[in-house]
Length: 330
Ligand code: NDP
Image 1 (cartoon, rainbow, N blue to C red):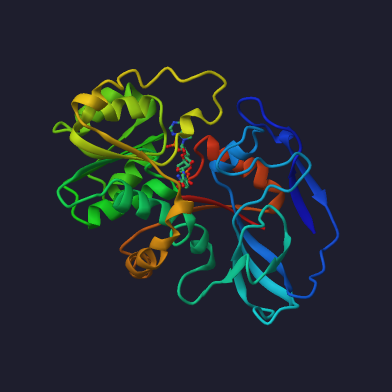
Image 2: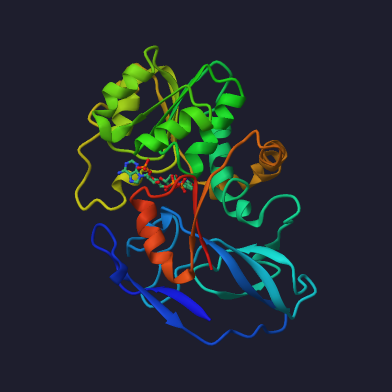
């Protein structure tokens, strides 16, 4: 068996030296436990925060310990009535080839309903994040003009498509390459998109949304947030989901500098964590699973082969190499 451990805490942008790849004995499941051979593991931006020692909403990874994260796999041996060999399960013991789970910390998934990878992305944590943020936090309503950053990623791509389907007047996305911009418009049906590396975000957003925005779904923070405040209409709602432009920062950000507009525009700027919104899971699955099955809601996955490549996949995720959900096939 193989596992990937945090070797040291990064300063700024992580490197491969921050990870250890270790060969270990295959664990044996005890009474009430099952052994899972992981097939796919999730690599996610929030893991960057957990590599720091600072206390945050998710506890820091411990140096010398496995990088925990979402995973799917197949039960190969079981000491519990809850699972039988051959069952596919979703659990939180990723970044390793084999995991021991219980009925309390793993759940069966139905691979006939959707491909198992989807339970880590579009029908899993990132899909629910998009759904909860757009509906509950931003209180989206038909006719809204919506701007989403990180739009070609796992969360952003679902936000934009859901907004469009639910009757947005205009959906605008930003992403980090010309190919991603093309993808947003041609494949995902965004009304407008721009490459934030092409020039100032504020100017590009203003051109894409001449009548302003009613909803901003923030995955990026910094200059993007400043631009969204500039373009916000009266009473605009912001669902603040993440600020990936700051995760590797060693200095405080230069933007936003325009927070005073929050007052005059009566902006509703609301941070959220998906972990608080699992009550929405049934509604989310009810709405989104059929769209995924029918192909009406498109989702990309960038799948890296080989558990040993997980550290590189994670570094590549932070650098924008992925379109849609980034996964590692064990
Ligand atoms: P993505 O699939 O969107 O992957 C991350 C993307 O971020 C990269 O592909 C890259 O795309 C973009 N990126 C990296 N650096 C920058 C930068 N400096 N400026 C702008 N974009 C950058 O990841 P997820 O969909 O999983 O997550 C998206 C956001 O949602 C993250 O901020 C994450 O932390 C947050 N999140 C929050 C949750 C919550 O509960 N609040 C739950 C899940 C995710 P590009 O090529 O466009 O630069």
